Amino acid sequence: MGVRYLRIRDLREDADLSQKEMAEYLRCSQQAYSNYELGQRDISPEVLIKLAQFYHTSVDYLLGLTNTREPYPRP
Image (cartoon, rainbow, N blue to C red):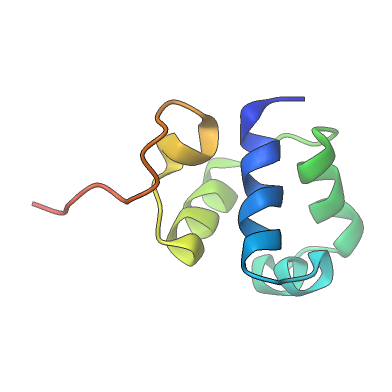
């Protein structure tokens, strides 16, 4: 399982949200969202951006490229 999948699960659980709630936000099925967390489905760039915006973090954090959770400052 990739780091990105663990992080989206941990972020969701930290926010006390269900997979169903996140699936509704992303406009996908609960099963599709579950497959993201299980690493059974690739996460599209569009979904990564929506997740980063929702959790106020960076795509790099979701992908495990950085351990800094804060989003990058905008120029």
